[in-house]
Structures are given as structure tokens and as C-alpha cells.
Image (cartoon, rainbow, N blue to C red; front, side, top):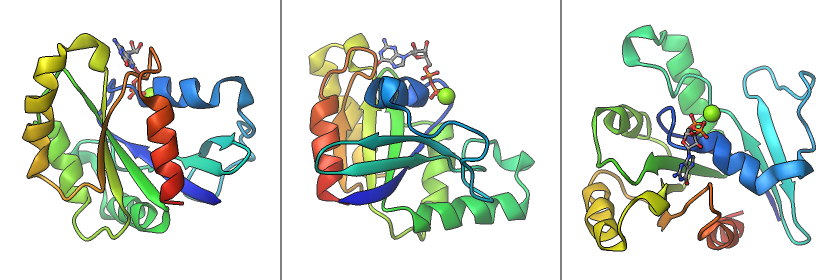
Amino acid sequence: KSGFITIIGRPNVGKSTFLNYVIGQKIAIMSDKAQTTRNKIQGVLTADDAQMIFIDTPGIHKPKHRLGQFMMKVATNTLNEVDLVLFMVNAEEKFGKGEEFIVEKLQGVNTPVFLVINKIDLVHPDELFSIISSYKDVYDFAEIIPISAIQGNNVENLLETIKRYL
Ligand code: GDP
Ligand code: MG
């Protein structure tokens, strides 16, 4: 099994931390040459039974007013061309404007989208239910998976679930 995955989400939600955690020293492709014309390969995770190729989605993290139409199209194209989208949010924050901006970009996207709720080490387990609830109606997520990228909590489960979609 092999597939392309892109991680989207506001700055500071933990996208890089997650990538570093899962790819670690195994980063296979990091040079400037490892670029397509549009999408940068951020890392490749090679397991015995699956290969996950993480690529960047340019244009999705920027505020709306700075986005040209071209970049909007690049973002939409990327989201449609990958096999899986991970939408990462911060468990400490409920659905807000920054997330709304990204959910708008997901309209018309056919690729399955996981909601990855990161930094669960910072919230009380009892709060998790209400955080998840705040996201339930905003989009039809294929999966909702809470993790801690810094501690590795539930990351194995996320990777196993990803494999099922490749
Ligand atoms: P990015 O902008 O989405 O790539 O976010 P980063 O990976 O740079 O993380 C932003 C900050 O959040 C850093 O200080 C990380 O150490 C911290 N961080 C990331 N993941 C976690 C987590 O699971 N728990 C906690 N407590 N902090 C985290
Ligand atoms: Mg980052």
C-alpha cells in the first residue's frame, strides 16, 4: 500500500511535530530536488506494509486576503489529488475562524479528510468529548482521531487507520 497524504491546519497546531515524530530519522527525501512543480514532499514513512508520502499543500494556511486565485486553485487541486487529508487542530481550542477558513477550502473536495485533534496531553479527558462535538457538524470527517504528537499518544492508531485508506 502506498499513498499521498497532506496535513493541513492553522500554524502551531503541531503539524511539523507530528511529521517529525512519525518520520523521525527515517526522512528519506528532504532535498530541494524532491519537489514537484507545486507540492513539496515533506517526508516519506516506509513501513513493512505501507508507504506514506507526506506533501505540503501550498495556499491553504494563508489568510484569505493574501491568496491569489491561482493559489486557491493549487490548494484545491492538491486536496483532490492526494489519497488522504489530515486536518489537524489544537485540542485546547474549539472550532474557530481559522478552522472555518480551512473547512471552506474543503468544500468540493472528494478526498477523505481525517480530523486529527492534537495536543490532547494539554486537556482533561472529560473535555475531549465537547471538543469533538464542536467539530462534528462542520464537516463530514471520515475519522476523528485525538493524538498527542509530542508524546506519541494514539499516533500508532492514527497510522494504522491511515493505512486502511491507502
Ligand atoms: P505547526 O506550525 O503546525 O507545524 O506546529 P509545530 O509542530 O511547530 O508545533 C507548534 C508548537 O506546539 C511547538 O511548540 C510544539 O512543541 C507544540 N506541540 C506540538 N504538538 C504538541 C502536543 O501534542 N502537545 C503539546 N503539549 N505541544 C505540542
Ligand atoms: Mg510547521
